Length: 311
Length: 245
Image 1 (cartoon, helix red, strand yellow):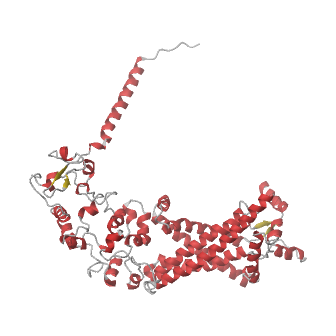
Image 2 (tube, rainbow over the protein chains, first blue to last red; image 1 turned 90 degrees about the vertical axis):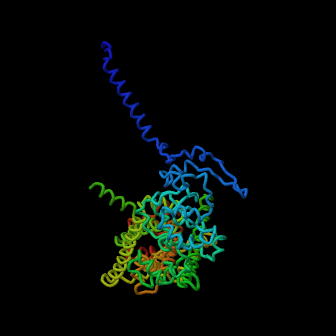
Image 3 (cartoon, one colour; image 1 turned 90 degrees about the horizontal axis):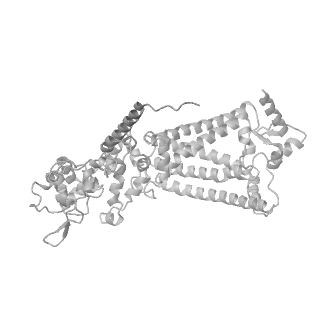
């Protein structure tokens, strides 16, 4: 039998060192990977009070106005490194800002000057100036909650203005039948877009920007300066404008290419009747043939089952 | 070598009759492969709103990949059709085979449909006696014969809409889309429902009818399923083991 050997002392030290190295690595990565440390710039500690849920004030008219700012949202917002006072002035408690959509857009416009200028020319902006509260303004498309404190940069995948999400963002209002009826928009614009090749491509693509090189709402209608389709300056108003818009992607497209575009309308007896009648003919053929096939197969299944069961 | 000899022995022992030649086997295989590829890459486009379609296109590596595959399979299918057309012309004009009238449907096929359904419903005791092709085979053939130009022309319009509308009215594009999509659904449902059922799930063929892949059919099965042709082949004093299509 072999004599049991004493474990050398250096081996113990070696193991201890190894344990220390592992522990150190874990500790460092714990600190390095802990992303919760990313915080909004809050130089004046505004969030100490305003981060409290349920904080509100009552104005002269007796309305409750929330003063709560969601810290989580601010921490990941596009403007997280811009201090509160940039927008809310150096003496925020002393100013009374009118809380309207227009005042909000104006505020964004103090920095984003050109976007604001275009926005005021758009159908949304024109209505905004007239005090219409229905229309979309900056935060309605740039923040998931329509909240200026949670604006997300356009190239972030969860931004409402990220290409993949644009149609859904527009649909928040434009798929609202009651709201659209007020403006005489009867076409189901969202549904018809998602049925089109453009919409299908957006739907089937993932979030990689390379897979999103397809037209969505804003590519044809414009974005900051989006126009009503009844406005002659709209990129989709009239065949001439529409042709130029199509040619942005379909370079050699001609007038007939545009004429065959269904747009947001469904094919009907008036609108591209050929497609409408083809649909009817194929529906009849399809139903008849499949019904016939189903009858034969079901009859056969019944027969074969009976035969087996009787055996 | 031993395996080849064994295979030959087995074939003789099994007593099989040649039903399809190598061209027909290749044509069916080409059609089947291109059809499956077209369905796999075309279906998610029709049902693009479903989560499974988005997942499936992701598996392929994105819409560009499914689109390229769809185009490739379409040209493959077109090539198979040209092959078939060339095969028909060659066999008729050069090999002087008789025109393949057996695939042409006639009144007897209408009766056979009724008789077969009557048999399934227990009204008749016997299945109709079939010559070279039964009515389902004829239906499949002529459905493809009509469907292929529809699919190819509409698909070509959708593949090159800018080029097509440079000389045709624009309404052909949405019309082609409707035709392409509906005809595809018709073909798919018929193939899955009828073709696959009768060639995979009937008691005599479960799990698969291999005749179109091997070109051969067991003698007993042939006698049963193509009784009239079998009768003509073997009982008219002219025994032969190869059937001209």
